[in-house]
Image (cartoon, rainbow, N blue to C red; front, top):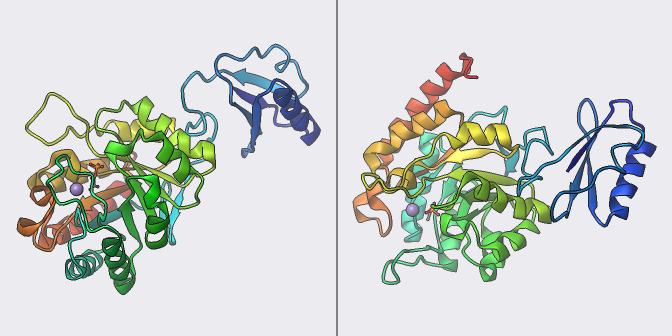
Length: 340
Ligand code: PEP
Ligand code: MN
């Protein structure tokens, strides 16, 4: 439930509303806005009887929000959240940010080479997985903590912040020590214990959409972290599982404008996992830009044919350089257009 106050409501009236909500055993969170303050009501299990609230002085209207997410929604938080990754801003009002690097960290040399290539082409955040959620147990599972160290060193060497995946709570200390952004992968989008623990941190988080998650479930997963206090959440559309087998997943680009409307959190797109095919990555990356994405996550490997993971969808360094030039040109064109 959202209690919208009149623009002339006094601090005393807002305090009285808060007290009335708390007396009902619920939590009240004032959300100051440019024009007027709203008060979000949290912790209710179902519909809240608002008859004692709507008559209190200063109340303009009471809006019932029946969605499983509130903190994530624009109804509760009209201003867009801009996530700050070591000074790089991701969100409304900032140019799209490109995160790139190999699927998995394979050696110190490979990571350093990739970092130099990402930096040289204009990528702003370096990616690489040390803990890999693989479909089969015999596939390369990642280098673990030594991999995290290689990633950090490579990022520091070229001056790029780093993002890497965390798969379980036991990895929190290590991943937080070495990474600027914690990635929660598609397979862990509904690992609620992990979401709650990560929600207690101040680290930025990249939450990837589960491959069979609806938009509502995706936003509800982000809500778990906001409910614990972490609002530095970047959402990532990475394709969903459909009947189509021509691509690895089906890129659901329509969620980009939907999320921009429904939520204040930034949304980025990963065309690599969405398509599984390097030849489709640049065009879908460009399409994502037109759809209004706040950023891209792109897999690039110094030698994709030798990659231990996801080589077929990884761009070559030359392919990545070409894509970055295209994105720059396209960004210039889009800047002058009214896309609403
Ligand atoms: C990844 O980014 O390498 C990854 C495993 O992604 P996803 O969780 O989207 O499959
Ligand atoms: Mn991958």
